[in-house]
Amino acid sequence: MVEAIVLWNEPNNLSHWNFHLDPGWVRYAEMVKLSSQAIRLLNPRLPIVLGGVSSCDCDFLRTMANLGVLDHVDIVGVHGFPLDWNHWQITEWPDRIAEARAVSGKPIWVLEVGASSFGAEEVQEFGLNRTLQLLQGRVDRIHWYSLYDLPPTWPAETRHKEAEGSSYYRHYYLGLLHDDGTPKRAVRNFPRDGSVGFCQWFHFEDPRLDDAVAWMKDHGVRYLRTGLSWADAYRPNAKAWFDRMMNALEPFEVSLTLCFTPAHLGIEEHHTSPPRDPEHFAEFARWAVQRYALHDTENQNSEQTEGVATV
Image (cartoon, rainbow, N blue to C red; front, side, top):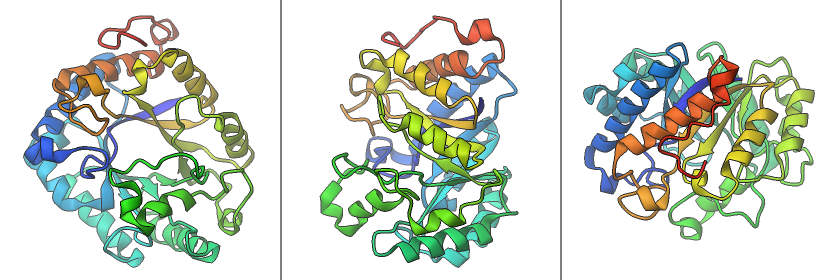
């Protein structure tokens, strides 16, 4: 079932939100407010999470507080990859969490945390063990990123791709399983008591879906973060894929992230672009909640598609 809606993914990261087109994140703030209002009209009990803040950036959270965004969310989501990308050490996690909580006044969920096996599987194993030691008991949700390595023929979601050097290729080694499903060293230390979940993105018509569900059920996973791509909503057969994915994920407590702008609705034709009209994203949020996050089965299966013409 859907336990929370996450509004966007890493809005403070240029690879996911082109803030050059939205100075000061004013348009993003308006989008979150409108979407939150739309969601609360449908399901006021559904927790709303501020989209995972890259690098647990508390200066960004201060900006969100100044813009009034934090009055419209229940939880703040943060991300951290200190062994791969962030300019701080893994031992800083407790202080980072404490600062985020103090700045926001909200519960903090770790929506993405991970360590790649780019250099050695032993590094990832250390990263998993130390991360859980530092975070467990300090936050209510930990989503390890990720279950699978990214297949080598798939692109990673970054703006500069290979120009980023080793930073780009680390994206491909973050799974506890290789892309073919074989386990790495660290997987033996992943808790099987349901206390730690995964963040696993599923691409459109992703062939890994059923195997991922089976693996997570077999290993006691309770929590999962994944997403519905607003851009994918305009593909042929989008509704059928969304339905299939959400039905398959029914056994888990899903933090459902809504993100990525359809090219024709952005200020520029790119999935990182802010939408021309923030209300368009709110319409997609309204549709997603009505279909997948209502307790009323009749409403959940409604065919109303306001604002999402192809879904």
